[in-house]
Amino acid sequence: KMWKRKNHIHAMAIIIKLAFLLSTYLLPSSEPPSLSFVHAFSPTASPPFVNRITARTLLERRRRTISITTPFILHSSTLSKGADVIATNNYDDGDYNENSSTSNNGDGDGDKSDAVNVVLVTGFESFNRALYEEAGRLLPPECKINLQVFADSDIQSKKETFASAVQNADLFIGSLLFDYDDVVAVSSLLDDVAGPRLLFECATELMSYNRVGSFNMETSGDEASPSGPPPAVKAILSKFSSGKEEDKINGYIKLLKFGPDLLKFIPGEKASDLRTWLEAYRYWNQGGRNNVKAMLQLVTQRWLLEHQGETEQQGHTTDMAALESLTLPELEITPDVGLLHPLLDDGGVMKFAANPKSYMEWRLSSACSELAEQRNFPLAPSDAPRVALLLYRKHVITNQRYIQDLIRYFEGKGLIPVPVFINGVEAHTIVRDWLTSQHEIDGVARGTITRDSTYKANEATSVDAVVSTIGFPLVGGPAGSMEAGRNVDVASALLSDLDVPYVVASPLLLQSIPMWKSNGVLGLQSVVLYSLPELDGAIDTVVLGGLVGDKIALVPERVRKLCDRL
Image (cartoon, rainbow, N blue to C red):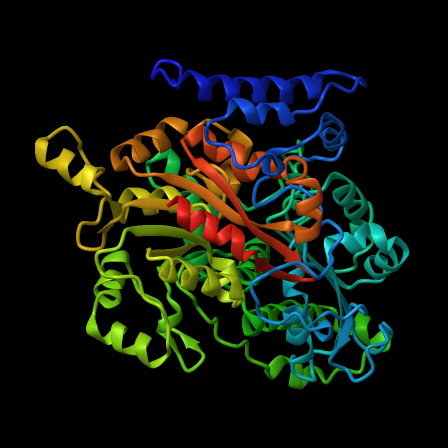
């Protein structure tokens, strides 16, 4: 398609990249030359260190990469400090606790006779380790647990400790695990877990280990012992996707909202167990300390009540009457999508705008200007270019400071940010339903452009550029990356109608800043964050920062570079 549009150079760059990637999967052991030369052919590439990736790395990653259904692929890299970064939440060493065990039973020694052993693996979200440990400490005393929190890097660096913890676990929770070696190591241990196994947004091979009571996600060819939800439940789940192919994944988010409530009316033990899994996932998906605490209480409370006799034999001293009387905390809900701004922070409580139009009405109001003056906050002029920023919702609800810093930088450089947070799978719906441009407005007036029926005129706003901090394909996001190119036509049509720059720029969540500066973007991270969006039409990729310890940080020079380009 690029060739037909006379964009020969860009087409050749992509052809060379794809051909080279394919060759590394087919060649058995030889080591082809470096891929860094591809940069010279790409008119939209960033400096060489952004896309530099050697054949040796690709050949190694060929053996380490496993099928994915949701965000990210590679394992965490070695973390280090000392880089030039924008201050984030807190870089104090006290935030990181080398001892990954926390307990609400007063001793934290992991003695199985005193508490329910829970292992939680954070995957690439090592920056949330302290939040998860705190959630465990806040559980009511009736839910005695010994919570051990591991990052994905611990699976290999602390093999014996990790294996011992999983083998002695009553409950296992894992999220965002994709690295081949990690998946093999974890899956070899999960059969030893006595109770529920909750795996969220992991490699397909790990998702099959999900188990709560009689509900599991194992694949089975035995029709007499079917796996997964019963037919009545499957019928309900099918109602959450629209008729549009590109919207099917987005329907999954609706399932998390309403599925547990609907399953109340489905009889049978398996439906009840599935409801427990969905409730646990709903708490996890909403995120934040209190929701994680509620999820831990839900699974621990149910495990203790259902295994009262066994736990008494094992020496647990829980007051079952008091445990049964406990009520689950209310789900703290953050919108699936919304808009934010540092000036919407009201005494530590962040407020969100419901849609881009209401956000822009507030942003251009005298009230916003007065607030900015009071707080000495830089604001771009009202006639400045408007840039839609697509942000990860999970980073918003866990208060990742880099988001606030990024918005402040945009304002200070004379750009009006329109910061929309999403789960990751709805990026195309934001572009299609909530964003427009002067080009699209003029085309609609002339009759040369026809908007989709889902366009929300009373909620949309016009923008001059779109910046995605998420990467991955525009349609489907992380969950759609296994079928790269399947919905390129949809993405191309949406972006063509807008006809504004579409840029992918994000901090690296799997590499420290020093490692990135010395080695570039490693492995397939460059593919999923940059190459896949390029198939949709993304240009001018910019790495904004990376990890410092367990925190996400921005590099000021990189943010300035992005703003100057825009």
